[in-house]
Length: 114
Image (cartoon, rainbow, N blue to C red; front, side, top):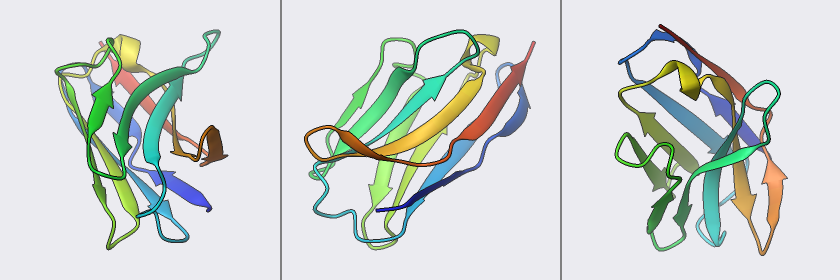
């Protein structure tokens, strides 16, 4: 499945963004969908995942500030990020999990200014 991430941008610290990940095909049977991020000079980090049954998981760095959801009818996954911090600045990638993270989108840049 091809994934198209969108919704990134420049936001002030404390602000919010909602990222979207549109899939070219059905996501209803994909075991999990997720968001990862990579900041300059850092390794890619898992931000949040959501299973086909709708169960979420959040990385420690965003726990309590993010909410992941999926709309299977629209083949879209969302990541709502609140209380953004400059440390959240990164390229955010959506991905599909089929035993491994096998399908990746192109990424959307999130920049948080202090």
